[in-house]
Image (cartoon, rainbow, N blue to C red; front, side, top):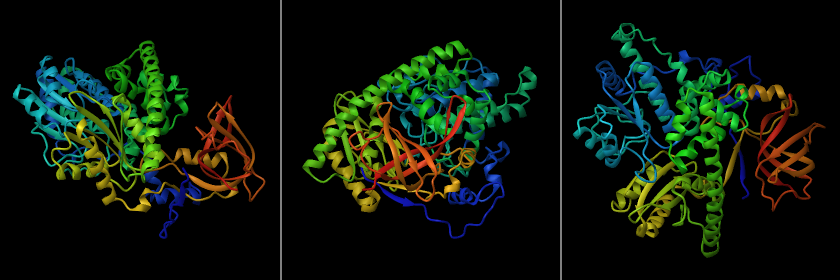
Length: 575
């Protein structure tokens, strides 16, 4: 699909703020909201304090009471990487603070679905917990919370998803997005919320002199930042200033080898040297392997990988997760091929809807989120992919484009047609839902109608926003290294992307699907290596001698040698 290349507008008010960075990089950072060197220091001391987080003191008090009384604490998690890291962090921190055998339970996506449902509460009740704590879920679990309380449990909800009009009657709710919460960062992942609650719990127990009286070494919360970094990046939440500190500090720990053995093993099995990783390695290498457990099997496998203290055991579990991820890729490939046929039929029969739904009764529930993301990229429309569940219900996973808040769009549908959505929830860019199979045609139309109302035609044009072109002197290892060190880069704090026209001197396919290029910068005699992954083999290689590239500056490390390489996000032949 041809894409429109749009250059990020220069800040007219730009003022140089540093002597450490070249002006080109300062302009890039300024466009992302950075105004001083201090904001790029990412010191732990600059983290927001937990006190403004609504409900965190009450939740810490409940957990502290339970620990002092020797009561049973059960964590109910979620089946994605954020849920897995949140669960692991909660268990590890509670154990370190003296809780007696804290336990966890993760709903199987295929049996129970998402969240604290009454059905999963019934399973939890068999373990006789005194306190039930949700992580990365619970803000929409009115019935589940009510049932847990009716069974005599105290309920602490920790979540980061957007609340609906009603919230559960829990004993404490910790969620930066709940009404009346003064915590500045609304972008935390579920694992970030748990980190702040555990930090507050440590302070509460310290004030009660619990650690000294029990001769327990007070845990260092920084020890859990590897988990926070992984969950935050894998959940693709916006990297605001606070999240960047959490991710940066976590990555520094991983690079130094001070990380959970399971994280180090997942990086190794994914072909990454943990001493050289960056944020994207957590998102594209570790996250998918961890998520594969929840998509195809049981997320408890992933959680046990994170909890394990044994390198040997961690390696064995990481190998199992890697195999599950390979199976996931195979299933995804088949589903994507089927969805592309559906898309082609839509294009032949009529104009492509503004909001596109896909459904096949043979599709795998655990993979529809990835499928929706792939098809969203392919047709540049908000997409929902559905798979068959039980009792005449189908479950959908939605992915949106910039400019459409997908959860708000679903909320509009729910209010217009209260009988159409059984349940839904999510973020601006991703959401999940359940509908009756018989209602699929009606829902598809309703979704397209709402999208049409809320997006303009220009928002539906595939585009790439870049930071402009680079001068010849900027094509250097030192500049690429500066960019790498200025991260972590991620959602809402994007890694610098550049565009320009280049002469093609050589082009060939490597690894069956990747295009290797030797190019020349036309304003100089500078020769550059470039690579475009997963290229369209029907278009490349070809006879073009010139191309427009959208690219990142990358450092290619091979056999001890470090060379500059352009990592191509988009390539368009110039005739």
